[in-house]
Length: 372
Image 1 (cartoon, rainbow, N blue to C red):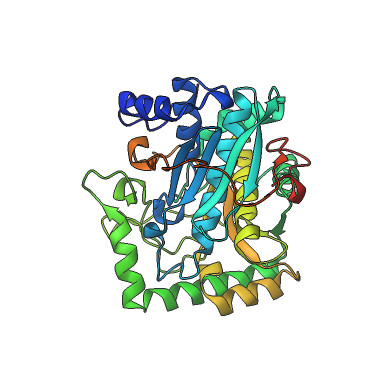
Image 2: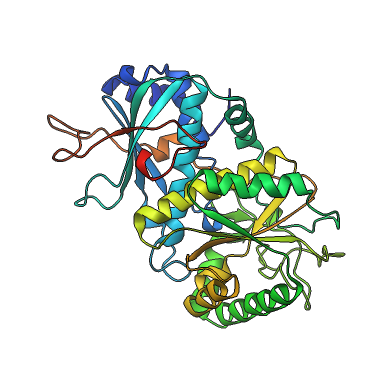
């Protein structure tokens, strides 16, 4: 069983019994397991911008719009990526319990915060690959510390690219030396611009580098070392200035750019699926990963990145991948904070009109556009 943030199990159990989740075939313990897995998804500055509502025949995933970062993420694109990652984990955990998830993305235009409704589409045992990904969920970390100089093996590179393709996205591995120099210059340009913005710095400081007990954000202990003055890839200080300078940083990490077919809420949620599948695949292969978010947060730099990798698809995520050492996890909000109260009135939880539902084979080959 995946252990996750549980809050007060009795309170969760009372809510579960109030709305009868029997059609999903989940016990109280299994429900906690599924939601705990979803809550382990990554998010910008560990804001954890998701909420869940238990409806009579399934689970709703909502964006917690109050946790959007208006300076770093004014459009909410990174928030939707995070919700897509949480949805991937939720689907994967349901499959781990033998439930074939039935997913509808963004079913109600009148409720833009409603990211997805997940219902039961029958029974289905997990494949060996899905089991490996599920086992990686509690072990996945964002590793902001230096990596070793060992190269990412070729089979792992193929697996990472296949993971993105399996979720309808594309993963470019930036290996050309000239492109890497240009990409490093873009990363520094974006970083320096953001750090010259007092509002950006204030937002970063509100969510990172703290020492007190919290259930969100990035504590100083997980922030990694202070970036060196000549660093190329590790530029942000998540420690609030309390960490020691790095003794040395890997010379050539693998840099990967995840792209989707287009921008927009639906594609960004799907890109979150692909991002999480790539991250879990990396974890299953014993690899360490961190994000280079500044490259996709500054619009002109993001456009320059798109041209650099020679694609028509907009880049959504940039990853630094390598061989690293274990790092502590970031905190998680208790499930009692993540549960919305049951909707009132008859038909609560139903989709508007005749919105179609499609059976989802779950994370894996074929779970692309027509499955959501």
